[in-house]
Every structure is written in C-alpha cells, then in structure tokens.
Length: 436
Image (tube, rainbow, N blue to C red; front, top):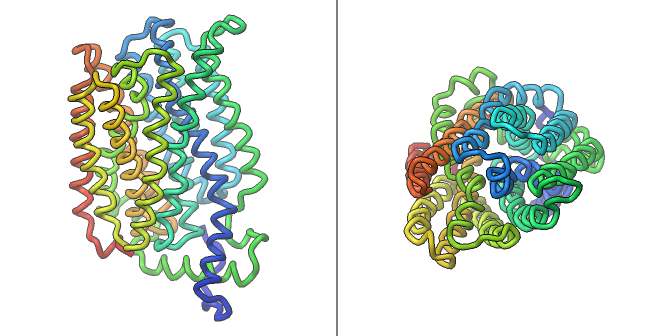
C-alpha cells in the first residue's frame, strides 16, 4: 500500500525532530494495535485455561483437546494469504475491525460446545476468522516505519503475547474459580463469553482511530508526512522483492517459512500447555495457576523490549533471534528434568517463555527487511500461515503423546529440539540482507 510518494527529505527536520515524528506515530498507532493483539491472543489460547475444567465436564481426552487446539491453525492457514491481500487492497482499518468482530462471536460460541465434533468446528472457524490480523499488522507497520526502526515497533506490538498472559492468567483463573455454576453455566463457559467482549470493543476503536495510509493521517503535518514517506521509499529501494510473485516464489520466503514453522511449535506449545505444566508441578487451584502463569509472561514483556532495543541499536538481527532460541531450548530440558519441583520448574518456564516470545518477535525483522509492497503482503502471509501449521501439529502431537505415555515429557523434548533447529536455520540468512 502506498502512502505519499518519496520526496526530498525536508531540510527543516533534523534527527531530533525525526525522532519526535516517529514517537508521535508510535503513540498514535502502537497502543491501539497492541491492545488488539492482547485480546486476539487471549481468545486464541484461553482454551488452555478452559481445558482445566472443560475436559472433565465434556469427557474429552488429551488427544481431543490437542486436535481441537491445533485445528485452529488449519483455518488460519487456508484464509491467511487471501486475508492479507484483501487488507493490502481495502485497507487495515475496515479489515482488522471485521476480523475482530467475527472472531469475538465465534470465540464466545465455544461456550456451547458439547461434543468433540463441535469443538473441532468452532476452533476451525475461529482460525478462519482471525487469519490476517497478525500478518496484517506486520505488513501495516512496514507502511509507517523503515527497517531501522521496525524491530522495536514489532516487539512493542508483540508484547501483546506476554501481556495477554499477564492479564489473562489471573483473569481466566478468577473467572473459572468464581463464576462456576452462575446461572447454571460452568466456569469455562463464562470464560469464553466474558473474554470475547473486549474484542468487540477494540474493533470499534479500530474503526474510530486507525488510518490506512500516512497520507490519511491528519494528525501529522505536511512535513511530517513527507519525512515518513521519504524514509519508507528509501527503505523499500533497498529491498530485493517487491512484486506479488516474489512473495510466493522467492527462495528466502520459503527459508523463512521453515524457520517460523520450528519457532511456532515452541510458541504455541507454551501458550496451550503452560497452565497444564504449572498444574503438573504442584499447583491445583485454577486461581493459583492463573496467578503463577502471570510470572513468565511478565518477565517476557521486559525481555522483549530490552532485546528489541539492542537489535535496533546494533543493527544486528540474526543472533538476536538465534541466541534466545538456543537458551529457550536448554530451558525446556531443565523444565522437564525438574517438572515436579514447583520453584525450579517456574524459573525454567519463565526463561522458556521469555526466550520463545523474544525469538518470535525478532524473527519478524527478517522477512520485513527483504520484502516490500505486494511481495510483503503475500510473503508475510505465506510465512505466517505455513509456519503456523506447526500450531496444529504441535498441540495435537503433545496431546496424543500425553494420552499414550501419561506424560508431557516427550512433547517438551520435541519443542526444545524445534526451536533449536529454528535458531540454526536463521544463521543461513545472509546478514547483509537483514542487518540494517
């Protein structure tokens, strides 16, 4: 999506004023997008908390849960590329609002599930509905920020993942602890209903406050809009892939798909099974589990921001992805070895969670550095959709193995190996393409 064509950098604006302009943009856009992602991620993974009561009430096995949690990503995969191309054409404002209202309705409908088939259908439809939000926002940020500023912005947006855990853990635990039996509904039913409401509220906020293009931003002066347009035009002149076909055929896009596939196993393994792992280490009450699950995500929020600042300051991308991936892999092994020691397990899970979300946020600096325009719209969606297929395979595999072995250990070993492999593949990306 174009904004204002590149023009000469206005001499009246120096480095200090340039920083002020981007700060102005950031305060306008990032809090809104951040809150959208918080409620999106919460609606995506709150099934992990519902699981604590839902499986017992509905007589679902771990395999049924794993398949239902993961089938979300089949719907996500099928509609993500079309969704991102539509966003690129019609604009982020209307399309993101549509996405949020649709998924809120479907997420709330999960409260009426009674059979495995119904669970699978509603999770599949939730994936269809939500497809396009995350890659759409990543694409949208390329319209407003050059690559040298993008790592921090992506990280600030993606702190929605750990903040969803900080907020969602205690809130989900409280809902399930306090609302069970109210009006004859189970705690997990109230969970799906109440946590869908913020998505509707944020959809209307998007319609009111989000602009599709820099040229639409009346809260910027003419000189400020020209500065941003010039920076974006100069930045895109350095990328090697611009047209739609490049988004599907560039070999680097397929390398990114492979990297993200392995990383996403760790991300969604953490999101869907963290409450269960905490329960297995000795906590039993849903409210206590919710409070303990807040700690790893709170730490992850701080670590994400610090690492993103380092990445932008040093203009180094690859090791800011690989190092957290490898540290997280080792921490998974520690979590397995001390799974029945609550203190050590919580420390290990805190490190794992921090490393996984940092790895994911820093990863997205790589494809956005080599793609622009229509190639970015298609390529980002392809990477996210294919990579997120691991979100289907990972939870299903862990659930199946847990039923067969009555243990989550093998599943955690697989997650450790996956993020380690992803970190290794990152080093195959040429540093001169992304370190800018």
